Image 1 (tube, rainbow, N blue to C red):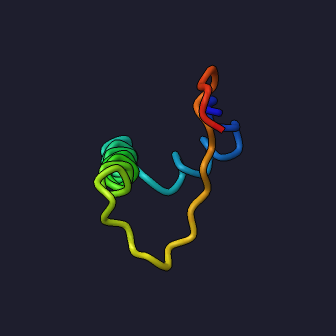
Image 2: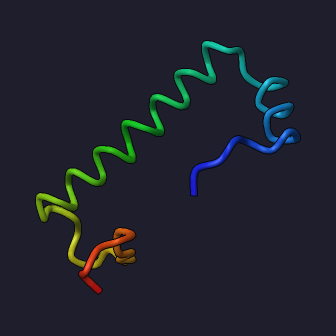
Length: 62
């Protein structure tokens, strides 16, 4: 579940990356995750890729 970063992780990021670098890193990760969802939805993921199906809360699909 989404949650704020732990303080020790935040301090480590601040020590290693500038605010601009952190923003670029976050955007890159977000784009990667978003594109992976699009590719899976379109059915173009590799056949041998391990997948985990997690039902949407409130969904009747199991």
